[in-house]
Length: 393
Image (cartoon, rainbow, N blue to C red; front, side, top):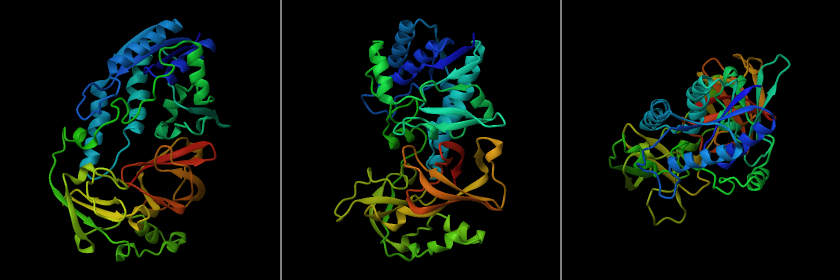
């Protein structure tokens, strides 16, 4: 009998995933991982990890499966949280949930599961696996389009996918809740976790101030008719890579293009598209962050959600930051293909072209995208299959 170690988080999804695996005849073992205990910056009301452990243990007991515990907090701090701090210090916006899956759930956790005799590891993600004609693993979107979590797994490789199972990938959330309710599981009506993976919802500036010091800087308002936004977006169809490279650059903001409208406590605490946390009023429309400069500790804002500084049509990924899920879909220099792309979780898929140039990989959107942010992951799809991803430069 094949042994599957499931990551039990104390939530309803992993609870039902464990039940499904047991119904399918696997030798199921529950493993709860502790990844974070520091409450600095964590907003009140989040369930602490100990409560999650009690819930996971109660579900395991109810299902009649062994329960184990592993402390991965040191790995999580080094491989996820420290990376977050470093990226924010550079004015970039990382996605810790993507990193958590690549570095913790399907690496550190996988190693712990193998020590328990696991043949496979399972999670409660809403995504699916497929196989190509050559036998390689495909990462597919979950059947529930409202809960599809394939984006969070966009950095997994073939070795990791070969060990993975996603038992509820073919199910929709209401069905998962129904099963948990019928089984009278303690997690049946538990709210979904939010915020940073294993940390929860945080006051980001307070959380980051564990390592990044607050420092007052200036906020500059950039008018929408600024010469900065005079790019000719029709050139995105050009065959000239230099044109694409220029279009993929973030706007080069400078105080000379705007006027000071306020102050802030650290440019590293803000991200493109952010509205809350500016505390600057007196304008006809809300202000949004359109640029940050951590070197000079300055923030640039635009008025209104349609400000041109919020939108770009081309993003760029360095070759060494581009990850293809399987070899058959990997693109070579000079190749171009149609695809769909998302630059954040739950964003509807956006139609685009991917072009591999000599200098970088370019994603060229049919329609301009709001809030393209350096440090985030762009995930590429061909239909239901997630074919690759990369860190936006």
